[in-house]
Image 1 (tube, rainbow, N blue to C red):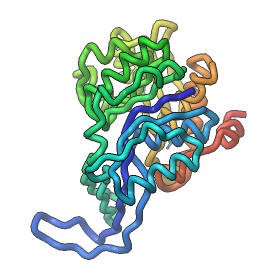
Image 2 (image 1 turned 30 degrees about the horizontal axis):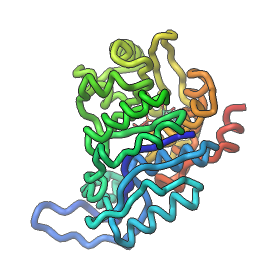
Image 3 (image 1 turned 135 degrees about the horizontal axis):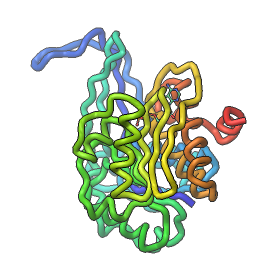
Image 4 (image 1 turned 135 degrees about the vertical axis):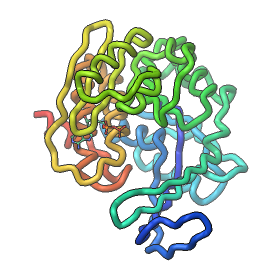
Length: 298
Ligand code: ADP
């Protein structure tokens, strides 16, 4: 099974003719509300792709928190460890300009109060794959990685949002997944200019983790590890909105690894999931089913 330790957010989206400057008021269109947070998105992705999924996270004791938990439960995800705290649920305030450019304010709320001692070791014993991101406190991510490794699970970190990582955290990982920008931040290097430079960067990262994957959007991905290194082109699709393509990829990779697939097949599965997510608007609504992924793969 897959254990996701991470964030849950309510995304509050308003279309605007243009973004306000400080001190200014801009009148926008109707508010729309979407469940989000990288942790929750990746949990939903893995569940739709056939994995048994449990999530550990924190929401507020408010309407958004209840709605987010119900949403996960509707996907068959175990939420006993998504506790409600006396602080607001995490939200992202997103204004979308007419040119499609977003301006985003994130208020992590309850996500920032998931602490290392909140993680029960027995949850990790049952997990084949542990999936982590960086939208909860770093010390919690690090403890989760250590608990996962100690339990014999494969620990997958999607190092987003980008930040440099302590060596102790990298040492507990099985798989590191980053996009080009995040790869540069983790390696302390400049952003790779193309697939060749990205592959070189993946090889550098693979000196510190067993497997490093650098995703390149519509250009696919590169990976490096003890078993070798390689390039995987993206599936050709008509992309309309790449929001959550990265989360679909991570969820798909985790689901395939948990099902016992070897690395390269699992990367292909994840990459098909990422491509399909790019063909539909939104985050969680765009996450594909296992059936859709299998039909793209065949
Ligand atoms: P992130 O959103 O984290 O930056 P990417 O955009 O690199 O992640 O997407 C992750 C993976 O999803 C890619 O490696 C690719 O396999 C797939 N993907 C993303 N965008 C597209 C696209 N436009 N067409 C096909 N596949 C895509």
